[in-house]
Length: 445
Image (cartoon, rainbow, N blue to C red; front, top):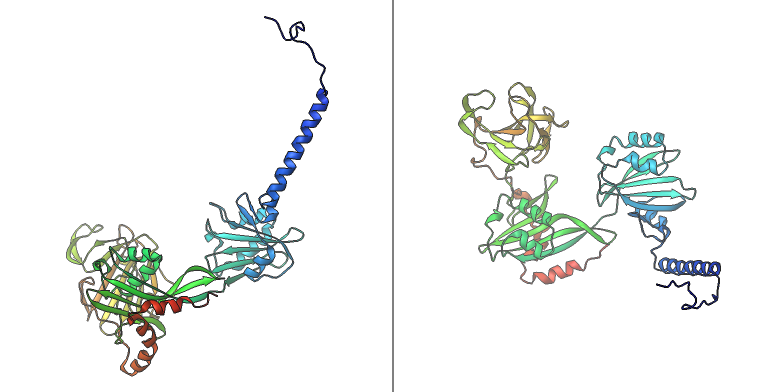
């Protein structure tokens, strides 16, 4: 077989350009191509961090806008937003931004009375703002959608707690039950937590598990907005649930210095005592006259309710009252006893610790945290042993008939009726959608 070098069959032609010239032309073409690509990217705002784009998961922002958002002063030239990464802490973030150990320690010391920097959570946003010299002037950490911390760095370190301006806008919602209240809320685009709030309001009046197809609800609540953006909701102002042809109203009204819910006659929707003193996993042992004790290994009465819950779970006072005992015993462990108005008394056993505000003689309100779940005393695991007395006798809290909370006093009824009349009128109107439409046109900021 003949090779191409055999010019008898493959005649030789002189090249138009040399190999070196061809190399130069290829290089020039590559440079032109890269220039065009970069120009297109820059024009579309995707090329550099300075354009306000995503760069390695970090977003650069206009420093003037962020300074205004957080209420900061100074000649700020650079701003960057990011989120706390998994296993990242305050020192990790600030050291990478050129902040010294001394400044970081001073910042930690300053915020210790109101915030533990070890509680900085992965996924929460933060912002770094620098001056023209590239020095970090501020570190801003967002605890949630409203609250944030400002770390002023440099020669004079300062840490401040701040809040974004929140606007509460009245909103409406109504729907019909097909399968459950949660499903009905979902169809209206409402958050589950709002349904939980409604369930808590009606906890003593209606069993939401017994709602049936055809029942309906109407509520007016406060939507929470920051700079025109919806970030959640606050309290429910009023509600009505129609169940089996009956209307159950819940009207917010301030009584004894706190917001409570009443029906249209001024009767309270809550009882004098909570249904349970904590958010528990299960009831591990009930009230009985004969139970085998897991530690003592013999049968004896168990005159309380054992609520199993993780260690550290907050324990709440089930009703208003005065702390009569708060201490420790070998059998009960750390415990709290509260005397309630009238003839009732409660006791909370095996606590891991007692809240600092819970002292003998101190007054507590229904729902106040008084202690935390533990396994002190004669206990095999973390739980709360809850005891309840009526007129000096221990009773089964889960089966005992409990008194209702006090209604609106007779002398206060005229003021109550005047205060709730507009809300009651809106909830009763058949043409509720027209009322809600007017509410929805309220200014957003």
